[in-house]
Structures are given as structure tokens and as C-alpha cells.
Image 1 (tube, rainbow, N blue to C red):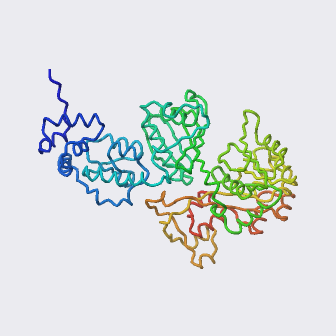
Image 2 (image 1 turned 180 degrees about the vertical axis):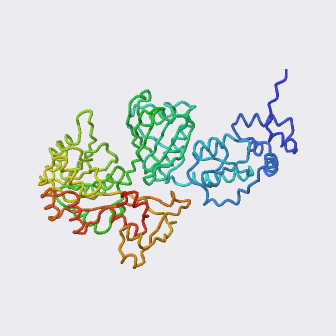
Image 3 (image 1 turned 45 degrees about the vertical axis):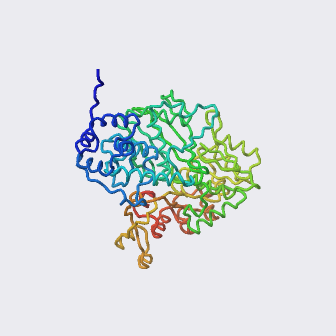
Length: 568
């Protein structure tokens, strides 16, 4: 009995009709292409010596698709970092441009729907095909990917090059721990990590809902949805991330914490702090990106104005006293403290920190992660530090009276103490400590400097000048002299290189030195409004005034000032 003939695709039948291949060899070529997992068009051009130009014209006629000349593409305009090299070579497809939320992919085989599906899954962007000649596509892929492979690996490379380091040498190999049918999930997660790093995101959110799965990045302080993998993959995504983070993949009932170290080049690695949380339809996973380079930026990169920078550096040189940084979660307090620690970090000084958790490893500094489960909280760590001859002590956060009292005692006995609180302004920091039960006398004699801060989105270079009436500018807090001097206010415009007109963030600060006049108000148990009034009299700008100065400098917008300062 003869073998049952396979069903030929519409494209193959069209090629037979046009006389490019004959009926007898059609089945053989389709079977061979499928066995090699190669697109049919690529197989015909390479193995059957069929004209690439003739196939392209037949395919265009059969599917009613215009034929695009790939040689007209400017390589400098190609979308970067969206699709892995492995996926491009596997499917013989190349993304050539992006318009809005649509990614246009060059294909020589219009029947290769799996390529579009896999690229859409990896990028989270709707894909559309662009028909091109096979010979042009092959040359283009070799030119683009060949150039990358020949260069020294200094940038964030393809997911093939990712090296996930683990702390436990007995941990099973990553690939052995993950089933082979999870390979698309592995590629997807690796691509999400790299994309978040390239975008400068601070957090990644993996969120399962009843009928959808969302991946969101927090970039410049704002969450953006970037991908929607199938909800059926939610358990696999969670399991893969938990394996990478060295968590218990069988435990889904309680939150877990883990950590990933990702080597993105020979000289650069980035840590991810990972937390899982059981939710109604699975496990929500949030990753915080901990880039050690952010702690090495230096004070000039933080956005302090010259007078504020001078007060910051002056306070660091004090032999004792408290250096406090305050602000809401995500306002950059840790980076401000780490910057100061790096300035102070010399072989002559003994520096110890108590952190929850230790976010970034600082060479030469003794960093202690607090662990409430075993009784090692901030106050207990502080007591231990004071028995180890410290010069400088950093406490991650002052949360209670006991920690506050030990910190103040250390500051009054020859130690520099650096810490954070969650308050909205420098004067409110005094009120918060008083409400904890710290005596006013101790605050007035131990605190050297208080910094309140926010992070405002920085305007992209595409910004545009706004025409705002003078009376509106006066209401916002600008002076008539500034308006008469030609004050220019800019707003977001938006381009291909930014997020809605913004790119990056800039620090906005209130820096208050505790002067004798302010100490007197504290000693008299003055409230935050009274302290604020004295700060204004002594020339210390509050958060809103500092933010308006950033607007005047063209660094951010009035809308962004209102967002980060609540409009006042």
C-alpha cells in the first residue's frame, strides 16, 4: 500500500501552479522542511535552488500581500532589544519597525504564523507580517546578528548569554530543574528581565488574574503594562522564577523571599530582590532591581542644588550626630544614604549598617541584614555595633522608640549615625520623633541634618515650551521678577526615545541644617509649622520650592511637581 500523500499548503500549490516546483518533489520538500523545523521558503531557496525573487512574487500574489524591499531599511532605525537573537534565527524572522503597539516583522514565508505568535508572546506586542525576499532576509539577519556576535560583549546581550548565579553550590542546575517544554517560558522571563534593565525600570510585577496575566514594569516611578502571556502559563512562570530565586516551588500558601544575580556582561551583574504573594488566582511576584552602579553615581548625579550639596557634604564631615533622610517609599532615600557612605568609605573608618534587607553590596562596609525571626532587629543590631568600635553607623529605618533612643545615644557619644524615616518633610521628622517619645532636648542636640526628598520624572529632550498665563504662574509660586526675566516653562511632548515625554528621574530635596534657631524651637516643643517658618526665614527651601526650581531649570514639568508634592 502506498503512503498517504500529505496535504500541501496553499503556498506550495501556488508554487506548483507557477511552475517553480513540480508535484512529485513538493511533498518531499514540505516533509524535509518540517523535519528540520525550517520555514518552507528558506528550505526551497537553499536546498532546491528555487529563485528567491520568483517565490516572493508568487507568495505576494497568493496572499495579496505587498512585497517589501528589505535593502531600503536603515539599520539605525531598527527596534532594539525586543526579540532575542535565538528567536530570530529559529523562526527566520526579523522585527524591522514598531508603530504604536504594533511590531512589524519581516518574513519570507507568509505561512509561518508560529513565528508571529512566538514573537508576540515574547514581546507582549501585537505582531504583523511584512513579506520580503528570502535572500534579502537571510543576508539581513546574518549582517545584523553577525555584527553583534563579533563585537566584544559589553552591552546587555541576548538571553542565550544570560548567566544566573546562585549562592548555593548544591543547588541543581537551572536547566535540569526546568522541564524542556518550559523553554518558551524560560526565554520569556529572561527577555522580561533584560527589557526591564534596558528601560531602567525599578520593579517588575507578574500578576495573575481570573482570565488574564499581566506583566508590568515600574519605570520612572510609573507602572506600565508590557506583556500579557496566556493565563495558562501562570503556574509555569511562577515556578521558573521561584527556581531562579532558590525558593520552595512546592509552597504556594505563604509569601516567600528570594534573590537572583544576573550577569549581563563579563564585568556587570545586577541583583533582583524577589517576593511572592499568594493571591486569588495564583501567586503575584514582584522583583526589585538592585543595580549596584546606582550607589556609585556620586553626589553630583543626584540632583542637589549647589547650596544643598554644600550642606550635605558639611554634615558628612561632622565627627558625631545624626544624618536623617526622609520621604515616602520609592523616593530614593537608600541611594542618598549609600552615596554618603561611599564618600565616607575609607580604610581609616569602621562603618557598619543594619538594613532590611541589604539591597546593594558595598565593598569595605560591614552590612548586617536584620532578621526579626531570630530576634535580630534594628535595635539589637545597633547594640552590637556599639560594642564593635564603630565610627559610622547606618540604620535602615527608625521605626520605634527603642531604635530611636539607641541611635541618639550613639550620636551623642562620638558616632555618626545615618538613618531614614517615612515623613513628608524635614520639620515633620522632628514631630514624628517627638511622637515616638524622644525628648526634645535629645533631638535638638543630636541631629545635624535632615533631608526630605522626592523623585520627579525628568523631561526628555523632546520637551516643548508651554504658554502659561502670568497669573497662573504666580499662583504656582513663581515671582513676578522671574516672570519678567523671561521665565520659560516646559512640558512633555513624547518621542520614540521616552515614556510619554519623560526619561529618567531627578531628585527634589529639602535640606535643613539644624541651626541654633531651629534647635531653640525644638527645645520649646514647637510644632512642624513653627519649625517650617524658621526654616523659611533661614533660607532652607521646602520640597515644593525646590521642585519649582527644577521646573525653572527646564528639568521637569509643573504637572510632575503637583504629582510628587501633592500640589503644595
